[in-house]
Every structure is written in C-alpha cells, then in structure tokens.
Length: 429
Picture 1 (tube, helix red, strand yellow):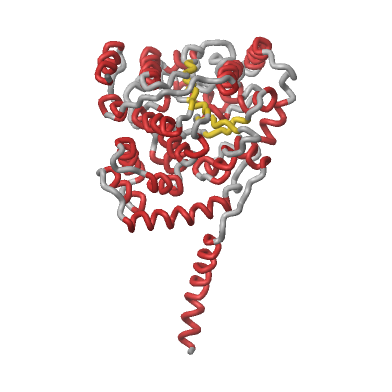
Picture 2 (cartoon, helix red, strand yellow):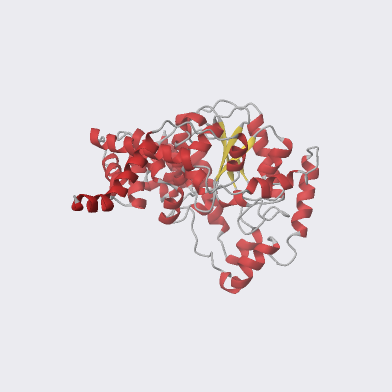
C-alpha cells in the first residue's frame, strides 16, 4: 500500500495532467473572435497570427468587414499616416489584413497562404515581392522556423500529393530547412521521393493537427500587440476628410522632407541615428558583391504562384525600389538589381500574373523611401492608389498557365539577360 501511494504521488499528477489535456483538446471548438479582435490582428504583424489559423481564417471569411490580404515582409511595419491600413480606414471600404515581417519570404508565405485556401478562393490579394529576398541562400532557416509552425507544416502534409512536382519541391525545401527528424521530416522524405504517406502516417498527422487546431483556437488571441490603437486610429484623423491623390502626394513629400533632415541619404532621422550612423564607415561599399539574379527564392516564388492558381486568386504584385542615395553609397549594382526585377516579372507574366506594379525605378524620388529599402510617405500614397484601384475595380478573370520549369535549378540560376530569357521562353512552348 505504501508503494502504491508513493507511485501515485510520483506519477499521479502526470497522469491527471495528461487526462486534462486530452479532455481539453477533445472539446468542440466554438471559439469566435470579435470584429474588434480581427481588426487588431489585421495590423498586429504578429508571428502568432502569421503561423496559426483561427483568427485569419475567420477574418477572411468575414464578408461584412471585407478584409483583403496584403502579403509582404518588413515594409509593412512602416506605419506612418500614409500606410495602406490608415488610408483604407480613412477612405476605402475594405481593411488590409497584413501578413509580413522581416524574414517572411516566399516559402513562409506559401504555408501561410495554404492555410487560408478556402478563404482565398476567387478573391483578390496584394503581394509585395522584394528583390532583396533573392539571395544565394534564399530564406534562412531561423526565419523560416520562426514564422512557420508545426501546425502549418502538418496541415500542408495532410493534402500533399507525391505526384505533384510542386509538392515534391516543397517537401525537399522543408527537409533542407527543418531537417529529416520527427513526424514532419519523415513525411516530407516520402513526399519528396514521390511516395504516398501510409495509413499510420496520416493517423499521426491528423491526430496532431486536431490537437493543434484546438490549441490555436484557445490561444490565438495571445501576443497580439496594439498596433491598431497605437498606429492606425491616431493617424486616421491626421488625413484630410476628402481623398485627393495629388494633394496627398504633395503632403507626403513635405512630411518626408521634414522627417529626413539629419542625413545625406534622406532616410528618416531616427532610422539614421539608430541604424546607420554608428556603422556608417563600415557600410560604405558593403553591397558591392550582392547578386539577386540567382537564388532558390525563384522556386519558392513558383510554389506561391501555384497556390494562387489553385485558388484562382487575383493578385496585384508590387515590386518596391531601394533608396537611390543608399545604393550609390553601398555600391549596389543597380544593373544587376534591374535584371533581377526583370526575371521576377518574366516569371509572373509568362504564367498569366499580369497585375504588376513595378516601383523599382522610384527609389530616387522625393520622400518615396522611409529608409534604405522600405517605402514610406509618398511611396505609400502611390502604392495605395494602385492597390485601391485593383481591389475596388472589376478585374478580368485570371487565366494562369503555370510551368514547372520555373521550379528547376536551371531557372533559379539563370542569368536573366534578354537573350537567355528569350531562349527560356522558347522552351516553355
């Protein structure tokens, strides 16, 4: 009897905790988020919102509020009064739902988009695609792990088709970035090799997804910051009541000029003081050897395009510029930069993604850039006019024609000279 009590004192709490967890995650999911919480999540740029599913799926299904997904990376954090979320709150009949932070490149965005497959079908979206993503390595493992959780990976594996070249490619990228261990690694190895998952594999994956779905519904409102209260609402009333593009653009130019007075690069004063000034001498010439024309990011972009094709999502792609004064100081090869832009546009347009806003030549315009690589002030005003027109105007139905040649190493490493692009185009026919 004494031994039984001793064993119970050791293992009893563990058993009870396990039973409570099973009961908790077996309860029906009835969690419903308020519209106020959806609006807060839409501008939080929280990794919790990005890699989980409950709030964003509900928001994208909320036709009364009309959320429109804006996919991008760190530029979405530049929340001045001309930011698209502020402009929409003041002038437009939709609310941008922002998905992006530093490191949310094409592959993290793919898993994010995949988790909203039903909500994005036959809808519109805006996708900011930065040439700076297209480095030799592509997305880095720490960033991918930070923004792409187990829930998203397993949800994708539930639907992965080993006969699809896109799913085999994605599985290989998962193995490269996450390794071969665990449930995800074992399943990804099979998909990458073209083998179907077993009944046991699917049972394990489905069980874990069911548990994670409960966890997501219960805890998805945690760690959502107050960007809506701090940056959106206070700026709305700073804008004129009536929308006038020319006047807004002039005001934005003036605002940018007032905020960029302490440096030769015409970047925001606080950014220069904190990020550039302490390292300015070391940063001179620091981008001479960068090359954005050869990268695994081109293949990662292709799986995003395939996902948009599968959901028939009509997408406006936006290519931002770099600060012209900064690129001269750091030695960035702008001919290389424009070749990478041409390669991105070629990949888009050859497959029917014809809505492209190319801002890559605007980096020298007054108050267009808030810092070295992020648009702001006047840049946001121009961005907002184009995105609003796309969202609110009737667009031709998309006719996508994808080619898995854009998944190949040959394309990823192709030097995009006009002759090389023309030769590649001939092989697509």
